[in-house]
Image (cartoon, rainbow, N blue to C red; front, side):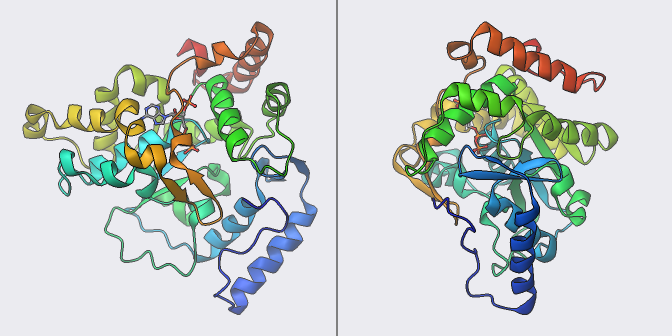
Length: 334
Ligand code: PAP
């Protein structure tokens, strides 16, 4: 992807006054924001407490103006590398379980990245989203407080993961997708940035806490899931997810083994071995990403192979301090 700034617009064809005004506002805004080192792109900008890539700052402004949410919309929200791809597959196949048979499933042909858009990269004001069947599914990595207020009436599924595993997973992913024109980032370097919160949509702790608190305030609106729970008891978590999305499994479906079938269809083993995920590429509008990069190991605790005891302790200490009093437990203690 291009890392020069400003990034190209996602909407060359739409030259209406409002759109032009938003582009100008974006240019003005980005000038005023503190700048930090990006992992994926060259620079991140601190916007209302969170570090965003330029395209995220811009598309966020477009979303605020152009995106018209519907009360039935379902959002999958996550900090990058927390289990988004897995949840995409699970949400899509659960909502659409009457449309496809397991043996001839959309996921098997096109993979999870094809199912629903990542709004801060793929949103395009010229695309008509009104025709999509309800519930419409959308994905975002943006923190809750940076989303348009109209969206907050929708339902959110949030997935979180041990920050140490997120760090390693993200380092791997961004080292593969970072422009070759930029110097590679060492683990020591990304570790320091991560601890300082300088990471796309970081600090991770603030991101997680916003959705955690919202899930406590409105459990009917925000379902808070953990990657580790999903690994340990996928059927239990899937039943929770289906009920939250308003599509609980019936007794008949339970007897037929539909829950187990969906879990198997969406498992790391199943998805990572698909042709589309071995060789395919997903076009995120501003960047193309090879699908195999979304499937590395899919394990809990792989950080142990990379982080020293000192690094582990530093991240755990920050996690403990940040989450203190919240009732949320993340990481090794889960
Ligand atoms: P994204 O936020 O950029 O979309 P996301 O899917 O959240 O990425 O993260 C990818 C991680 O989920 C990878 O973790 P790892 O680097 O520690 O291996 C990937 O392997 C893992 N992953 C992808 N699909 C699954 C799955 N079906 N089950 C378990 N883990 C998965």
